[in-house]
Image 1: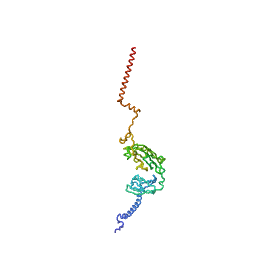
Image 2: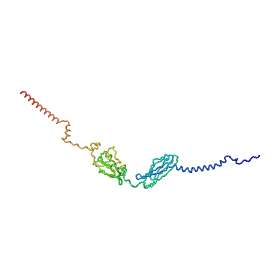
Image 3: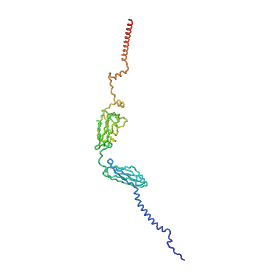
Image 4: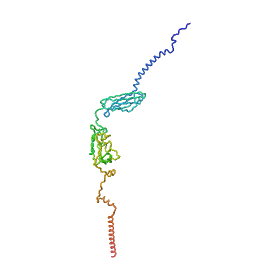
Length: 360
């Protein structure tokens, strides 16, 4: 009997159906991967972000722009390459600890500026980074153009005049300024006797001669100071401060007034416009007191002593304390002899009277 014919399908290679399905599987995988990347990329870009916001206020006539950079990703990040326009930004820190953490920055922008700009770069621990530019529009009404009604003495500027030869000075607020109630500033003028009219070192020692202090306030926006000037070598100074700031003398190791002198190039003297408030002058040496500690070579010769009248108590006391010599001793001896002789005469006369009475 003939063998039956076997269908071709029964002789198909094993796994042929799986082979036919591989291209379809690969195509589906590619489509899925493409879709995942398409939707995941924007999400990843959005999370690695650190936006900056700003608030505005007015400080001392300028616009204060306060920036806040906030971390939008969980990883730690560093803030770098920070710059600003029209002025730079000072940050409070450079590290963002995690999502929601922030660093603060501040700009003081002229009130004439229209915008403020902040540029910065943020780099995360996973090596992602972003570079941003934030801009803030500045309205015209942020800072009022109206000047303040008053000013504190510590912020005020002054002008002064000074005449050391006459010992006079004036100090006043600059035009347009007014001190607030309760605010004041003391100024002092002082004159000294000196050893010469040369430079500071050659004039030592110096001794305070006269001083005066006046207080400038809202009620008294200007003051006038006057002191007597000695008619010998002298120094006259106009300084910041009250009587406690005035030095009583100057010696080799005594610090000078320095920048306290009005008109000095340093603070606070440079806050007043005018000549340097220091004068050295005079043509004759000053009379130095005997209690002064200056060396004998620096002191004038003492005046000749005057003899006291003989009738004065001091002279009598002085004479009684002197030793007795010469003619005074001879006079005393003569007086003793005379007194002794007189005593003997009286004694003899008394004896005779007693004897005569007995004989009777």
